[in-house]
Length: 222
Image (tube, rainbow, N blue to C red):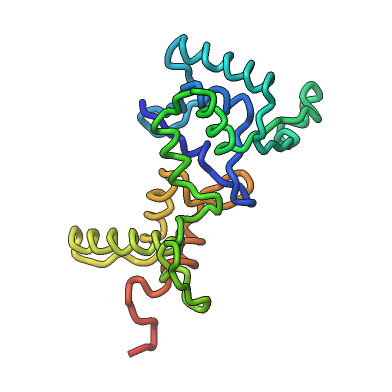
């Protein structure tokens, strides 16, 4: 088994990362998101020991008592659950991930290195950070601009294309490259789209980042 923080480092459509409040307590207390050898994520966070369970309760108590200035939002539960009359219209409270982590650190809690790394790799815009002071041509394709996910996808795509060409003797097509990138980038949980943190699909990667990457001529071109 190994940890996979991807579901908790996915920005929504507004570019922000929010955690269900109950998950926030557990993640900061040291509970782990585990997946099996087939990369199937366990449905619930797992407490590695009794200390993590105690820390969760301690965090919950402090948060309620001190009401820290963390950004919050309240959403209705998923539509598929609303058919159950027992849970219909019960709101789920969410807390801004970075706000919650910074508050917990100010209270003396030690944050797991893996959790901090997962959050730091995901910018609030859902993209990699564009270098400060860099001049960007507004007409340039995004895959030419360092710091964008398109640039990162194209870089990785070229590396994989070159490796595959050496391995099998032929250059893979753009669809094969896009499908490789869909899996390769989704394992990090940082290149994302959609309110529910849906990973970029290969069609979007192909369209936005891989134009002309194989340098093959179109039919009819010389």
